[in-house]
Image (tube, rainbow, N blue to C red; front, side, top):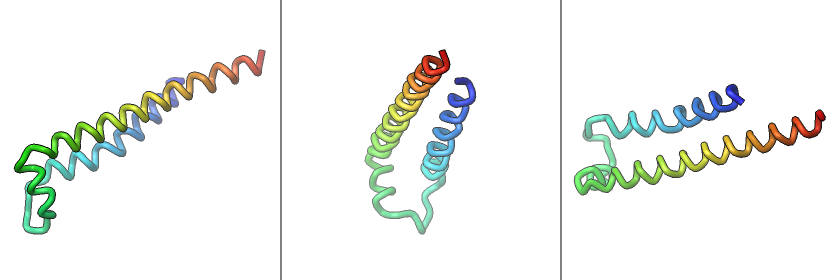
Length: 78
């Protein structure tokens, strides 16, 4: 259980950290115009919030699925 939770958190971190790093970079000449427009209007936070909600939902689903599978494995052993 703890190992699977650790793996799920590692997966979540691997998916979220690159997005946060990309958002934290200062806008340069090679950034897309859409990113500049989203950043200026403040809508980039909506995008980040949606991504965070989706990833959180996936994490919760994976944890619940792991618990169900663990319970089924224990029932099969008994």
